[in-house]
Structures are given as C-alpha cells and as structure tokens.
Image 1 (cartoon, helix red, strand yellow):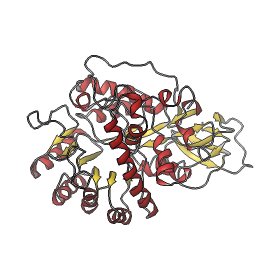
Image 2 (spheres, rainbow, N blue to C red):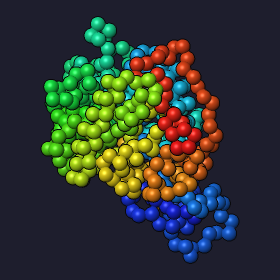
Image 3 (cartoon, helix red, strand yellow):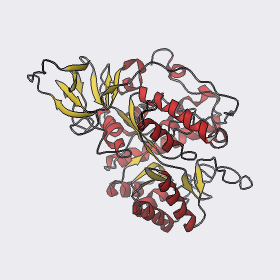
Image 4 (spheres, rainbow, N blue to C red):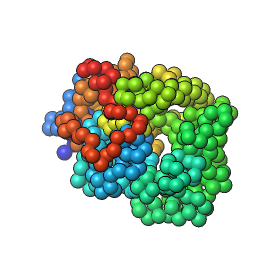
Length: 444
C-alpha cells in the first residue's frame, strides 16, 4: 500500500519555485507522484506518514564533501596516525547516523584513510546501521607537493594516512586499479597542495603535471569510475578541466580567466567553504591560533570574491562542507554551506538550496537523489519554517520535523555523547569541537 506525505509547501530541489503540496505518494522506497492539485482526493485508506501543514517539504540534503574516516579530527596527526582501520570504520558508522539525523540523506566522501568510507557505505547498504547514501572514494592520489603528503620527508607517507603517494605514472595507474578493485565509487586526486607549499603570489601549487592528470583520468574512466580533485590552485583547476575531471573541489585561488574556463566547461565545483568559514568566524571559540584564523579570513574573502564572479558567469556549484574535522563535526554544519552561498556568493535562498540538493547529487547519484520527482528515492526532509525566508532554519535541529530515507522515517533521537579516547590524540587545529551551542547559545 502506498504511503503519503500531505500538505505543506514543497521545494522540489529542481530550482522551480515552491508550491503548495497536496501530497507525495511513496511506494517501494520511491516517489510515485508529486501532487500539487488541491482538488485531487486521497484514497480513503491512504497511510499518511506525515501531515506537513505549515512546514516545508524538500529533498533530503546532499553533502558533497564529507570525510567519514576523520572522526572530527583536531589535527593531522589524529587524522592520519591514530586509530586503527577497524576502529575508524566502526566510528564512521556512528558518525554517519549523526549526518542522517541532521537531514542529510546522501553524502559524497572524497577520500580518507584506508577504505573506511567503502566499508561504512557497505554496512549502511546492508542495513546494519542507519546512515545516508554514500558515494565513496579511497585515499587521495597525491605527489610530494600535493595535499595529503603531510609529514616531513624523514617520516614519509604513512599507510594509515589519507593520502597515497604516487611518484611515477606506473604508481598512479596501480593505485587507481587497486582502489577500483576495492570497490570505490570514484577516484580522488590531490591536484594541488596546501599552505605549506605556496606560490609567491599566494595560492597553492599544482601537484601533478597536466599529462599526469590526463593519464589518471583516462585510466579511471576506462575502469568505469569518475574522478574528482582537491584543487585550490587556479592553475590546478585549469589543468583539471583540460584533463576532463568530472567535478572539482575548492577553487579558492582561481583568477577570472580560470573561472570563465570553469563556467564554460560545465564541470561542477564544490567550494566547501564551511570549514574555512567556521575557522575564520569562530575558530577563536575552540582554541585556534590568531594567525590561523587570520589566514582563514583572507582565504575566505579571496574565495568568496572569485566564486561570486564564477556564479555570475554560470558556473555550476555544489554544496559540501568538509565535515569530519573538529571545526566541522558530523551532524552540526551540513546546511551552513547554503547560508554561505547566499551571504558570500550572492545566491538567492532557492538557488542555494538547489546547490545543496540537485547540484550536489551529481557527486552521489543524480539519477536517483537530489529532487522530489517520480522515479527517485523517497529521501525527504520536512522543516518547520520557510528556508526561503531564512536559510539558517535548515541548521536548526529543533526545526527538523521529519527525515525520510527511502520512505522510511528516520529516528531523530539524540545519540549519546562520545568523548575523545586516549588513542585519539589532541590535534593542533582546535582545542574543542565547534558546536552550535557555543556559537549561538541554546537557541540557533
């Protein structure tokens, strides 16, 4: 027998304006019908899952950048050195439940330690644990100048780290084949470095030569896998476009010519501003040093300016948060990226929601999630309030009326608080997790 969600206002994720909802008809975990005709009657024996009168009904959110193996890491040592593969996988399933209860029904995990995200994905798909749909990458393919070769040369690239150091073309090909054998959904490349290796004019350096990027993309595509890349460097973004990557992350240091090239290519960009913005605006609340906060503020301003330009030129943007760090703990900030798109990039709330639903779904499974339409999974979020009037309501946990994954209500009961254990060493990024209560008090 079909189930029904009735009444309310529906934002279907497609970018169309909201309209009054008569009902969503759900069966076999999918959407059968989205009815906006107020005169259409319900069947007498209709099983009503939710009367959403006064609420907004929308697709479950999609976080296109969420690192489930990181464990709310406070520094790179905790991220890369401490915690076994087995423990990280179990911990990742716990954190995945937090993500789902925050209204996020799909995530893209662009890389992490070992094959933890693949294991978490498979455990959720098997019904062992509640969690969002997951598209999983393995370790980032990196060079010595790329993100994820973090430690000094005398330490080397540790096997528990999130990066796989590939020094030759043969190693690049072998790592891609190994990850495909292990079941990844896509390949993650560290196409640029971080602040430790900067260009004289600011911005990170490209980590791979254009021909190396092209080789890796060709091999991944040959094996039926898509490819994304961490690329803060504008040169790296341009090289990734030429190499035919499927989507790109960050783009902080693009210039206008590179942003124009991105827009013309049609390749989506996931800026993942939330981590930088949380550090820039509230890092002092959880022990971040002032120089680190100041640097984040400069990066946020630089990124906001070029992303605003890219948006005006027609670039496709996706919402992702870099959740998994102490500054972006799981279940806390997954909807903040939409607020930043409004405030920093100049989008309307409806445009931002589209970036956090339909657009972000590209990183997971655009054919099955991201919009409310027949034939897609019945992944639904019901919010008490109107996010078009105040986009911040999507971050208010008390405003979440219901979450459905494949038409099944999600238990929104709060989980037990987990403290850091002795083997999860203190990190240098911050002293504590940045919770909403710290920022806003008891009322978001």
